Length: 112
Image (cartoon, rainbow, N blue to C red):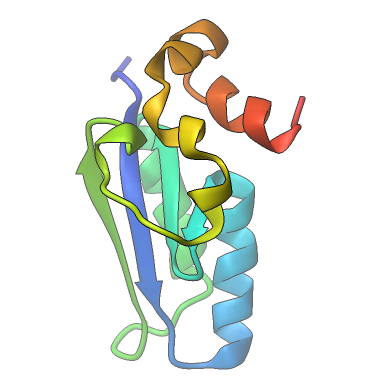
């Protein structure tokens, strides 16, 4: 089984209805860091199924969705935005190890 990795998923959607559907879909799968950027954690097979779901929503030639592999969200430089209220969320890696790959997200956002 392939090892889980982190991805920065971004999108550019032309139609407001599809934009809303894509945003809601990704909100269930990862952590929104901007209106159109998400951190997603999973194995390549998870990313494949994620894109299959997204491909059923978008229109090819009009919409664009991309996933960039990253070593960890703590390696992404950020300033301001929704995560500015949670500076330890990005910089405190021992929490990530203690709570597992998604535990550090859940800890800060109160998810069980």
